[in-house]
Amino acid sequence: MDKYVCNVCGYVYNPAEGDPDNNVAPGTPWEKVPDEWTCPVCGASKDEFSKE
Amino acid sequence: MKSVEILKDIHYIGAVDWDRRNFHGYSLSPKGTTYNAFLIQDEKNTVVDTVDASFAGDLLCKIAHVMPVEKVDYIVVNHVEPDHSGALPRLVAACKPEKIVCSVMGEKAIKEYYDAKDWPLHVVKTGDTLSIGKRTLHFMETRMLHWPDSMMTYIPHDKLLISQDAFGQNYATSERFADEVDQAELARQLSRYYANIVLPYSSVTLKILEEVGKQGWDVQMIAPDHGLLWRGAGVGQVIEAYRNFALQKPANKAVVFFDTMWRSTEMMAHAVAQGLSDAGTPVTVMSLKANHHSDVMTEVFESGAVLVGSATHNNGVLPPVSAMLTYMKGLRPQNKVAAAFGSYGWSGESLKLVTEQLTAMHFDVIEGVRAKNRPTHDQLKACVDLGRKVAEALQAKIASF
Image (tube, rainbow over all chains, first blue to last red; front, side, top):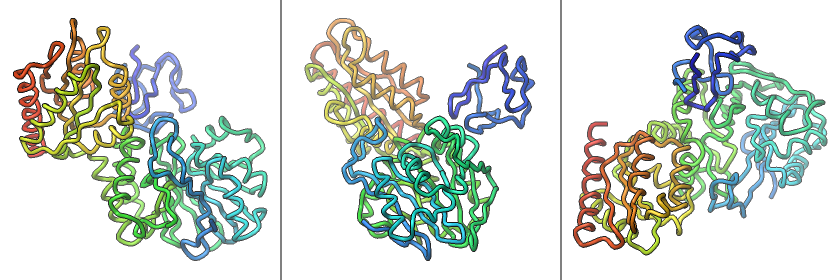
């Protein structure tokens, strides 16, 4: 599963870890992360991420 | 210096750091700076932001000039960076506040910086409000403008926006308002601050300006956390300036920066500059030995074209060029035309290495020039031509922007 990087702050979404604090379970691939999810560090939307 | 009442019952209680030159460890502040903080007298007396720890005494003294420090009820922390929160521990100890207001990310950062386990932290999100009596404070998170914890506080009663680092300038003055000081210097410091601090977050800045518009706030005064406060026509002017900064429209202006060993690359720099100037693009030439990277960055930000010269040294580029490129890359300038040049003794990698870095920054890169040991007359002519080509490409880019 690919990792995705926030173009604004550099946070890396790692599918293995997910983002449990914001209801994204570990093991969730990028494609399955909800569209309304935002970067937990800087609040950027999904379209501001690119593949690592 | 005493506190200053900037609006009825709203006092400036910040500090003027006349001697500050090293700003945050990575840039220079040639005109010093100020750490702005405010005291609002209402049913709940509220301090918004503090100052660098070394000026905590100054802050407490200015509060005491208005009222006893123990009477402060609330503290708002718009930004946790130590130049604005450094005096928090002393202020908290002195006034034992009922609430310390911060963003979600602010709460995390405050706990990481300070021993805050007993502090009455009160977390707010965009759209939240807090009544302090006659006044209600409105909060808007501005994540990454310019840290994750950043937020702004708007007070409709006074039409005052306390904007934290946005719209700030490193400019130490005895005056408190932007319309009271030298306008050219003010503009320069506003641009310098944006170039060295806010620039990577330009897309966020545009969104936040849009968001401020959507909130329908009638802003008549903007109080940033550094430098002069904006009022009257200055409010619209500084918002427009930020919009233009964030859009990064290319300007017909170039900067040539370089480092040299035996002056060959320096000769090439001047030839490149001649070509730019001949073709109608004003240019600034900056030796990296004579100029700090934050001075160069301000010129890069204000220029539509960036030309980088480095001699080849041990199969690489000279260390100051490497440092400058690293600093520039992190600040993510956009919409530039660029080219590299440089001399070499035997292997000549610098041209390729610098060109690769400029390409990686998504600039429109024009093929550069290199010269062995000492540039010949023809090679210097090629440098003049390079400057001319860059100027023409820049002017075409501006016309089509």
